[in-house]
Image (cartoon, rainbow, N blue to C red; front, side, top):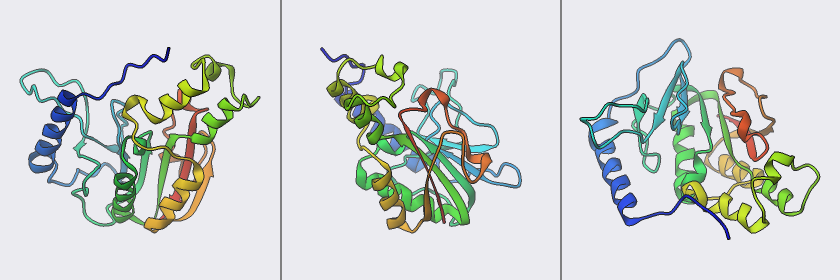
Length: 219
């Protein structure tokens, strides 16, 4: 039987929407402070804080009297317009983030990224790659052994891709390329792990190497 730790609940939904309301109305009205000569955004940072970047996510505790453990520079709900000037950032990195949004919200976020990115700036996006999971289901020889050990059945792997970790959308290169071009980006490239046009934006996590699609685009 499939095992999963993730289940949406009414309580969780209400808490998330309360946090979103507080963030949008009280916590994220100001632009983030600049860090150095180049201004880079780490969008959807989670707990993976990166020095030298503006780390952005909807992370804070409603229990404000308790010690803060999560570190974030810019508290934002990525489903809504980002409170930021046009052409503010030199580059954007976002890892395993847009799959947590419904397709329409993901497109709107990409449109916002285009708006706040400087001309000729680069966005680097990584997402779970549908095509890699299809390779697994086809029993492709290209699938590494450690990935095979994660799932007993193809259906279990697809469930994880589409449902676990609060995933709300599924992506491959063709869909992501079309979406980036739709909002205005050009020169959309499929990259390899650890390789890209701007080395400052390569923050790839090696544990996610096989299942991940790496894409860059230029404004």
